[in-house]
Length: 256
Image 1: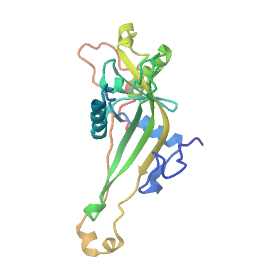
Image 2: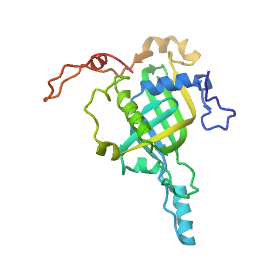
Image 3: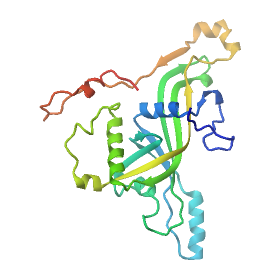
Image 4: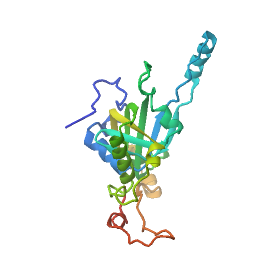
């Protein structure tokens, strides 16, 4: 089984807390990526190179104080590569594109962290400090690259579009894209180098002294409240004359 199993506790994807909930296999990581619809992308905006020693010192200080950036985005997956897209001049897309092609820059490829979380239930405990969630989450780490090959770019855009429809072929069920639409869209690929999934699924875990206390268990409700994100009934646009396609019909009542 393919895995991102860390070789030591120093690895970026090593789960330190509640390690029994950690999963490192590709199958689990991919299943959460495929179920989720929104990712949070963490990145840093490169600082402009300064020309003077004084400016370089200021730049170093700014780098240390620089805020991290985290932006929610839709995404697609092909194999162990995550694709993002946006307008060609978007800040995140530019930051993750790396040095221009053909440049002699020795700057390493920009790094990114992508997280996806699906909440499956509220876990209600006797103690407020033991309240929790049942959830599926994944953290992926990798170096970003600008997708410049036209064929890969179309594959990436297809995956991003179809991902929102649980694999329904929306890309094919659309008017042909215009060349200027493709050219004005920047696509970034993040090849997953390390990843970890974390899953909780179960009842509350109150302290034994509390679960054996009649005053608490007879007065305070504890248990699990399921949470679902569910697709609703499709509503046609005001100008629509086409029948609802099967892949849209099948989304009704489907849950993440």
